[in-house]
Length: 116
Image 1 (cartoon, rainbow, N blue to C red):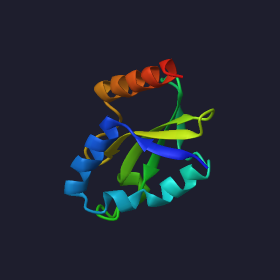
Image 2: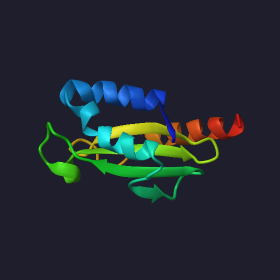
Image 3: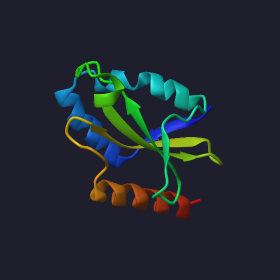
């Protein structure tokens, strides 16, 4: 079983999105169940120094399925059996992660790897 933790960036993202989409937290509960079991969904992103994935998640509130729902970025540390939810955004408002988000996620990865 993997432990799932959140980053400050993810916490800000979900707080903001929950105001617009009341079911946002409920929308990714199935993903969390799979991640806890070690089932890594989504695409492995190559432009990070760690195992970072981007996965599509449908939105009950948007009624557009996975295609127009949310994107969740998460970082996996296999050795520690830990998954960090790094960022989340609504596809309707953002096409991809921003450069600022990328830098914050990479800085978090660097700090995490340095502390190990």
